[in-house]
Amino acid sequence: MMQALGEFLVILMILLNLRLMGVSRLGACVQTVAIQALVIGALALLSQPKPGFWTVALVAAATALKAGVLPAMVHRAMRETGVVREIDPLVGYTLSVLIGTGMFVLSLMAARSLQVPSAAGTHWLVSGTLFTMLTGLFLIVARRKAITQVLGFITMENGIYLFGVTFAIHEPWLVQAGVLLDVFAAVFIMGIMVCHINREFDHIDTNRLSDLKD
Amino acid sequence: MTHTYALFHVLLALTASPLLLSLINRVKAFFGGRSGPPLLQPYYDLFKLLRKGAVYSRTTSWVFRAGPVVGLAAALTALVLVPLGNIPALSAFPGDLLLLAYTLGLMRFFTVAAALDTGSAFEGMGASREVQFSALTEVALLTGLAAVAAKVHAVSLSTLSSQVWAGGLAWEGGATVLLASGALLVVLLAENARIPFDDPNTHLELTMIHEVMILDTGGVDLALIEYATAIKFWVLSALLVSIALPLRTTVPALNLALGLGAMLILGVVVGCIESMMARLRLVRVPQLIVAAGVLSLLAFIMAVG
Image 1 (spheres, rainbow over the protein chains, first blue to last red):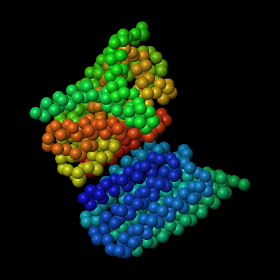
Image 2 (tube, one colour):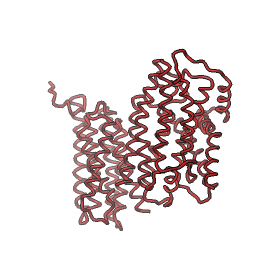
Image 3 (cartoon, rainbow over the protein chains, first blue to last red):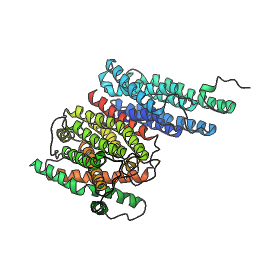
């Protein structure tokens, strides 16, 4: 039963990744990232055999941060810049989804050759986390708007987080707390950056930042 | 014994398939706050059309007259090949899932050929759209079926549908089947020209796909096409129900009742989807079908991986 639930959540995570690649509205992207953070929190709890109080508390805190605070900050940046959708991405949406499927196959192959502790989870979970990281990287590369790139960054962190929680047997929380702090700081700075870029250039298209302006 | 039930299923489909479409119309009417047409309206329409004569344009050839007949024949062949839950198909053999897909393909080919035969640019446009979208849906349909077939190690639709939920609700392949079912639902909507893809009621020329191809047919031919459409909807619904319905018993009569109940629920679901969604812009249609194909592909990867 737990196994079936775990597998269901992994598939949900994979589908959310694909949705992230296939939608143009930034609001929908933010929502997807938030839902994904919830799913990943649930998966992190499921992957522990007997979660103690501190484990639950840490997962809850991290999930609240990533499903609540970070999306709210990105939303705020969206509202202040007035950007609601990614127009004309570097890689089209249909192609993105197809590339995403290819990346999933790649991460499946990578997960098979990885030697992971078998108790930690199925190879679906490993490939799902690798796929989440790749999705984040892909979003950073293939989208123009700074906000989408921030979302890609959060997605990548989601993948690293789950990978770390599931497979770092000794002291996973120490690593996680560090990564999470980094991401929090990064999103914080990027949120401010996005606003500044927007105020300075009247757009947040990162490809046009190199154009000189008086 | 099971053959009796298979025959019963086919007879039921022959008589009741227009009813399924009118159920969808009633659901849509309910959402719109209307009382809707009577449940037997499709039958009245069919009888009205059957009593009429037909007018053929001088540009058309035998292809135009063959279109509706071959279309109906292909739909009936598909009906013989499709199971309903644990009720096997009337004719079942290994590899019949390919035949089912290509029977539907033959039906589409002749509809398109008849549309092109009229020489109308307008119908040619519809034919072009139909072919473009169905090229994508076929991938989703076949990959989805291949995923389920790979999971249960069966290549006959009837064995496939009787074994698919044999492991109970907590079966580990359930995820694969759910993904494939999602893709098949999109295929059902796209192939039958239902709302996110095409509006069966519309006659607005810019966005029509299916309706535009039959603008020049009338009388008996139109009745054949309408009836074939209803049968096709039944066939694809039965296919979806066979794969997605997890409730199975050992009593054939109960299985038949469960399958029919699931078909009715599916009709209501389609009606709800049609009432709540707007039709997609034409450029967005391939995106959604490709998404369904990706779902199928994911199911396939999970089945073999």
